[in-house]
Amino acid sequence: MLIPLSLTIAFIVIGLLLSLILMWAAWRHRNPQTIAEEGVPEDVRDFGPSATNRWIKGLRAFFILLLLTVVGFHSYWVFKADSNETFTRAKLLDRRNIRLAESGLKGWVLDRTGDLNRALIKYKYEDGFITRDYPLGEAAVHVTGFSDALLGGIEYGYRDWLSKPASTYNWLASPIPVGQDLKLSIDGDLQRFAYEQLKATGKQSAAVVLLLPTNEVLAMASYPSFNPNEANDENRWRTLTDQAEDPLAQHFSPLVNRVTGTLVTGGPTFYYHPGSTFKTFIAAIAIDNNMTNEVFTCRAEGFTPPGAHDSITDFEGEVHGRIDFADAFRVSCNQYFAQLGLKLHEKGLLLKYAQKLGFTTSPVKDIQRDEDLWLAPSANIKNFNYIFAPPVTRMILAPKPTPYEVALQAFGQGEGDLTVISMALIASVAANNGQLIAPTFEAGAQPKLITQFISPKSAAQLRQLMRSVVESGTAAGAFAPLAGRITAGGKTGTADQPISVVDYIDKQGKAHYRGDQWTNSWFIGFAPADNPQIAFAVLVENGGQGAKAAAPIAEKLVEQALRLNTSQGQAAQVPARSNQQGAKPAR
Image 1 (cartoon, one colour):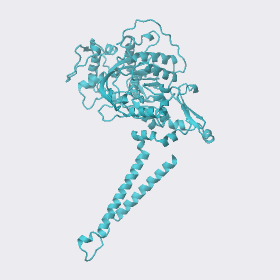
Image 2: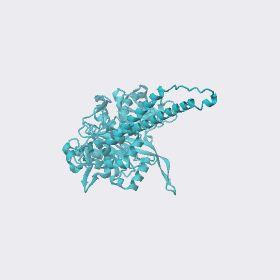
Image 3: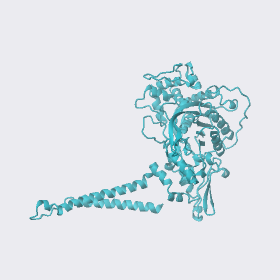
Image 4: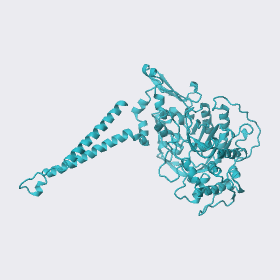
């Protein structure tokens, strides 16, 4: 790569020198003398030296402009094109780049134990060929990627690290230098378990992410998925990429990482409405500003915001009557949080706290990406963000949203759009004493504080509020198997999401779509309740109520994660499940 780069720089320098020489010559000879021609008529004289000078000046200006244009385009594609996602994707599929990327023996990618037998990616040199092995297969491909020249993931983001020779001796002595190993925060067993839980839902799509208190990623699973070896099947690969690039079909593509809202091949995809899990954000603001004494009335006819024609009701027409802050959160009252959200907005608090978390608060045409979110000190951050940087969370609060729009967003509907990773981070704020800490895949990385979102005292109150949801609120039924053994806090969510689904396929094999509305199931939380060791977010698309689909998965993940005790690398003593029943019905 050094020779092409050197030639490119030389070409640019020479081109600029030629441009300067031409411009200097043009300036020096800007007023050429007109040769007098005695006895030659004026109209004929114009075809002589005067006309020639004009042509030369015009030709010189055209040539200078052409040269500058060529140099400019050449400079852009060499030095700036990596910021262009279309170019980056095309470059990944370039055959020469594929050969170069796969010609070296990279280091292994290990899980958090560092055990070679639990490696997430293995590279071997056998019979003159370099082969890859992905032991977790489809369970981890959205994290690992497959061949940095084809798919992204860790392979693409950490290509420089994995390719750097492990030692000077190895570099000098070996014909195939071995790259450095990379130890991730991922727990291989928990990653596989999380994916199996998503697959067992029987739904078309789901996602989960689990974090340590330092926001190291313990598991990040997305369903549907694909086996990394499918990338070797040209027809299968073409089908996958075609589906991923179709805006209508993309929602069902296995290439979508539903945790980050990005494609494994790079680029953002789509958002989700968070449903009632977003009440955690609203509750945090209210607690931090001593606005928890508000009492509102939940009526059968619903709450109609000022100036609106439509009313806001609760799930299946539930009526809670006069209700206070704690009970409204525990039973997930939409009408209460719609009214509370309006009061917070009137005081400018929604905008203030949304901006603290880096939300986009004004309408924007294109999806922006949060390139300052992740902590990845050993990665090529540009490559890493191309794969993992999620779309920026958005909440439309400016310039002048209607009261109805604000009220809808206050309980997770309307124009408020988030990703699964952003909801997990909101849960981690409660677990981390109000601090928003950057997520990372690197085991043992020094935590990076993004912001102190709420005070530690407010975070403690928020944890108690979320604990009530698990012990006596909407998630009590789902978490009943853990009663008396493991405590947890969390928030259920049930979110309506418009979507395009296949209506029929015509005789030419072309799919035709129709609009539909799914009801997505959410649960976010942490465990144990008093001393959180994990935080998480679970989404089951079209899974119905949060308490019926997402919360049961969260309950299983909590038990498995604490049993593995991945934060300390040894098995924890978790009491066995009892066979006692009597759980409260799920909402």
